Every structure is written in structure tokens, then in C-alpha cells.
Image (cartoon, rainbow, N blue to C red; front, side, top):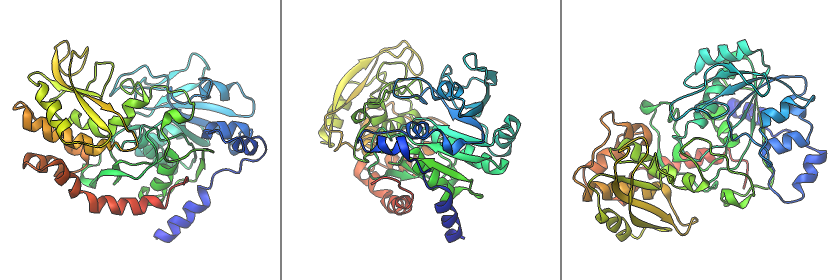
Length: 410
């Protein structure tokens, strides 16, 4: 069964042949996103198709025009629908919200809401929209619990159920495509912040993840095309490419946020603030009653690539709204050496040691974020950060071997 699935994957996920202008663009050495290559080739992959696009405010060109606006104005594309994820197509909703069903004022296109929809109900939306091909173009943040990759998974699954083609336009992983890090999700913790066994920091692009989903996780693979980037290097951070950064969600304001997010988002599973309601979410962490001892304890670990500063802040919303809290600010001085997941674990361990008020969220949200109970139970048992990290290495090694088969870039 696995061989036939992979044979199908190889046949259906080959990047579209993009000659002429796109090939010439590749020779310049500048990164071209999937959309740039698609447009340069005259949208040949979408020829003769009614097209719907799953996207959000990050689906922009280099001069920050939205791809929906660009394609709607181009007679070579029959764009008939838009599908909005969490936060919405135009990005008006906060975390845990969406924009609902409406007609886009700029284009007149119907916008359908995909947030928290999956399986047959989402397939029914694709069917009702009348599209032949579903296109996905959203900037990811590189972490398993960033929900857009599970929007991708759900939409691929629904497209297969509805008999639709699926095209993924690739964009860079903003925190590089280096080796995967962190615990691998156990299926009993499958939620919208982690549907399938993927490591906490996956080190993949959305097109690579689509290939992984199709080859390993979907019961019925979808007819898939991936329009890969040209010129992208796995070792490079987002700011190397001269691309505009559009916040993919309200609390992901900069690429620096993405760099720490796969580790410090774990603080959502605690009673500490993860920095929401500040100008540096996920870089500022704290709670009432914490003082300089946390920064001192974290700094004493000598973690690579990072320093910790004693910090005080007053969130304007979310945890501790309007209250001044103490904690740390993360300062990365060597991005190549920095390990966000190990750092996040070390901060949890030291916070629990220096602050008597430390507690996990009552719903054990931490288990959904880490994808297992082991991180929480080990920290509760007094394990060091290195002991916690060592615990997931065998499962991580297995995921890395699987992941390797689906990578598009070297």
C-alpha cells in the first residue's frame, strides 16, 4: 500500500513545468515564490479550471498586492471563490475567530469560511462553490501548532472527498528548513493545533508538508500539484530574501516572533503570559510575582544563541490585562545556533523552579501543544531541560527519516 501511495505521490506532486519567463527568472538567482513562478508561466497549471483560493493577508506579491486581486484582474485565470482560514481572508479576526461567509467588497467574489471545518462539511463547501481546483497560498510560521498547516491538511482531505484538484503555491519557512526539532505528536492528542504525527518545529515548507500529508496521512490522496519556489536555501532566514513580511496572524508581527514561537508558544499551556497584548508577543514572558531570578536562572544555563533579560510589562489584552508583570525577554544573538524548542523547555523548567505560583492550564492545553503527556509529567517530576529533550529523540529521529522523503529543496 505504501509503495502505491508513494508512486501516486510522485506522479501527482511534481512541480508544474514552468518554462519561458519563469525559467529565465530562476537564472537570476533571486528567490521566486510559488505564486511568482505560477504567474510568470501564465497560470498554465490553472488553465481551463474554475479556481478557488485558500489564503489570508500573507498571500501577497513582492509589491504587496494580494494574489486574489491580481488573479481576479487577469483574464487568464477563472477565479470564482475565496476560502478564508482562522483570522479570515482579509485578516480582520483575532485568534480563535473568522470572518464568516460574505462577498469580498474589492472583487465581488464569494468568500467561504473554512475555520474549524473539516471532512465532509468542508468538502460540501468546496462542492457548493463550484470550483474545479483549490489553490493554497498562506505564509506559515514553522511550528506544528500554527493552525494554517492544518487548514492545509483539512482542505486537502476535503478536496479529495469532493473530487477537486489541489495546488499548493510554496513560500519560505521563515525560520529556515533545517532539521526538525521537538516532540512528535501522539495521535490521541490530535486537535486543530496538531492533526498528525509531526514534530513541534517541522523545518518544512507548506509544499513539502502537502507532500508529506498526501503520502503519509490522507486516507485518500488528493490530485496534488506543488508549485515550488526557485532560489530558496534551507539554511536561510526570512529576511535574506527581500520579501515583505505580512503578519500571518495578529500576534505574529515579525519574523523574529516566528523564530521564538515554536518554543515559547508552550507558555499558552501555563498561567504565565506568553506576551499577547504586548508589542513583542512570545518574546516577552511573565506573571505577577516573578522577578529577576527567572532571567538569572535561564541565563545560567548557557543556552546557545540566546540571552535572557529581566523584563516588566503590562499586557493590553489576554492574560494579566492591564497589570504589570515580571518575567523575561528573549534576546537572540546567534540565530543559527538558537534552538527554539529546547529554549522553550528550559524556560518552563526554570519558571517552575523560581516561581511558586507556576501552574499548567487546568485543561492540560500543554499536552495538546506538545502532542503528549511526557513533557508535562517530566517537568512536574523535576527533570532538567536536557532530560526532557532527550526523552523525545527516538520518535524525532523516526519523523526525520520520514520527512526526508518529501523535501523539495536541498
